[in-house]
Length: 279
Ligand code: SF4
Image (cartoon, rainbow, N blue to C red; front, side, top):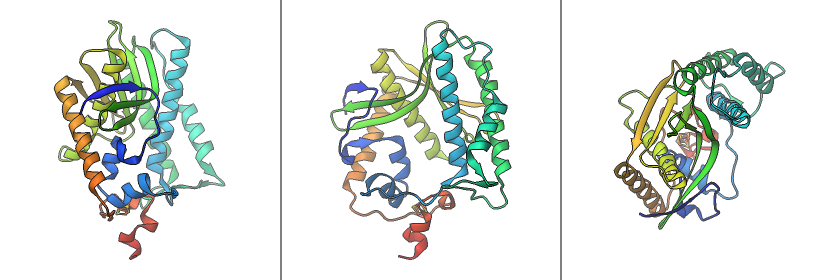
């Protein structure tokens, strides 16, 4: 597969020509892949887990924060995310009449809303610690952008969190994770993380004409933990081949059976999933 061009917007093409890391992950349960990417008219999931909501809320706050720094110009200095303000916004937005608003749901038995406020507080504090240690002195080069890579076979899409430029002018890409670093035996999680960063790195190499691109996923749940890779052309080739294999495999399928797994309770399709409704 050959890279033809890159863009920072998405072109409209049939599903059979698109691959993303979320499609690769969703394909571990083909029913979920069908619901998320194929079904027309598009159905709505029955609920969204509060874990997902905490992650997307944190991402949008970090995005706004980096954009404000970029608008001001200059390097990241002693800037810190306002943790108290962020928690206040989360509580005001998500809680109505003392209840979590629809479509969000707390799945874990015994957990309450305040547990997730405390989780968000830890994530934000860890983010501040990481920014102070690793990003002070760097400039914000770009924030939360759509990226598309056109190849002779398909379109690869993604959305990066942050591109920074250090004092020496070197670009680095960052991917914030509100969860924990995967356990060592969760090989697929590490694989998907590398492929996700690889997509960003390929786009960045062509977009900015940079040599080997360094990317890092930063896990913020318990303490800041960084997983980084320098993407050489050989690694990028493996990433492209892996994505092409996934797209070709999906294109050959005609049926979309569910694959029950330990995370089904957190899946918004569970109330209509044939594995649980008996249909
Ligand atoms: S509930 Fe489980 S089996 Fe059903 S769609 Fe979701 S992940 Fe797949």
